Amino acid sequence: MARPPKQGIDYFPMDVQDDINIQLFRADTGMIGFAILVKLWQKIYGENGYFCRFDEDVLVLFANEHHLTPTQVKKAIDSALSRGIFDKTLYENEQILTSLDVQERFLSATKKRVSPQISDAYSLVSGVHNPQSKEKKREKESRVYVTPRTQKKTNPPIIRSVFNNYDDPNAEESLRIAEELIARQIDTCSQNSN
Image 1 (tube, rainbow, N blue to C red):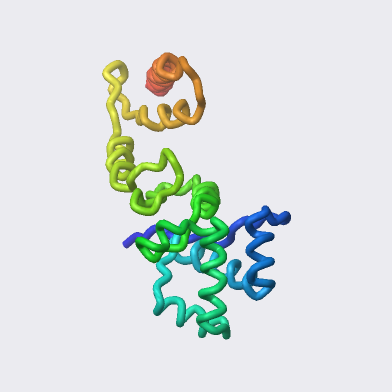
Image 2 (cartoon, rainbow, N blue to C red; image 1 turned 60 degrees about the vertical axis):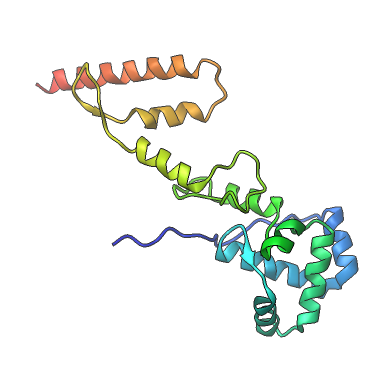
């Protein structure tokens, strides 16, 4: 039995120069607040990769785990929300800690993964689709096709995925030519092997 796909990531990049929001956050909360922020990022990236639920119970457990008071953690979260480090709307409505920066870093770190990425309910990144629609697309792309010319098995969606990674206005024509060339190559190989 295959193991379930990994949700979180093992490490995340952190800027060496703090932007103005992080500088103001650090001015509000001090280095204790900054340490709390880094531990929150570790929790987010390590658990689900791009968000974490953070209700009152999680706050108490988080504070206890890191030998802090719930008041210190709450102050850091409130400052991070007011400075735009975390998305205030998602926190107020869903008790979710996430941000556009967190989600973009997560997507960058997981771009080679096959599994679905960000749920529409929490997505702050434009152009990210619902995981269920990606799954249906993946099922369709994994089907094996038989080319009428050679009756050999091929998988055109793999070729299509290569062309989809480039902004080529002639991608469809390039794709058709590539498929024809591959079909000819398969035909030539099968003739040579006989």
